[in-house]
Image (cartoon, rainbow, N blue to C red; front, side):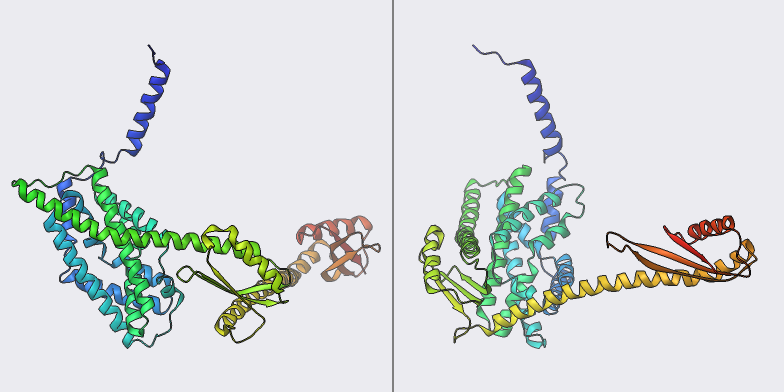
Length: 455
């Protein structure tokens, strides 16, 4: 028979109280019916909500066109797009089939109108070149999945809490639902199917995982599922919701698995490139990694790498299991396969970096010269004051000249700044008086070393 240590019992009890006090989610939650009513009111897209969505899409599209992150963030803040998505998650959590249908309808309407608005904007807009803000929304990564999942959880917990704070705007920014819709519209307007598919893919992934996070939130918060008077009706609703959930999640799970595999593949490929192609006299100016085609294309400049070394590099690829079957293509120096756009991009990037470094160096020189000029101006400004004070201290003084010089030892062992003051007198005063004047000048101009020359 074992007996528990009273101290261990007390420690465990204190730890439990600590966890419940700080991490218990059901303590500060808002009234369940009020939360559900608030989410219901934000689900429908009619009137003001629909116009706000259209304006938000236009603002986001303009932000993507001019490559302004601040404008895109502003559009996400005013967008009401989270409403029906949170509604779908809540309906799945409480078995509310009517709310699910309403949310799905509003979500579909909002999605279609958003894409049509963005498409019309980019058709009429003079901007037809994809900026970095647009390119960033054409290929989802595993990080987008985590952001959507965590953002959805944070959003629902905030909505169901009495003190909501500023979490909802933050969730709207983090999950970034607006930019992918605008990018999808850009893809349609410019006839770029890859942009459209990639952006809509990102939008769909974000949506599904926000819904999944909201569903988890309802369970964490302990929301009571809807009760039906007719058991048969209740069973039908549960089966319908389960079927919709499965149909939605299957493609999302498949897509997520592909995202994870692509992320791992790209990570391994970058490790392989970094480890294998570290030649001192050659530089990689362009690399293209394709998970779909299982290819790695590199462009190098500098001293040409022998074919034997490239063969060794290809053999080393076998050390990375994920890269099995990958075709490595290396272009060196020139030839028909040279990607001129990649070279221009690399040259411009290098030019920008060098220009930035040069600007920093020039700014440092300017700052030094400005400081030196300020020191000379200091003596200029002090000159008028000093001569007046000097005439009071020593009526025999006629002229004052003060400047800075560099004092260097003959053996170059040391150098220091020396302030030189030259005073012309009617009659040179005694040495003691000159010493007093020297100390006064030294203090007055705040000089570490000062030499007084009497004439």
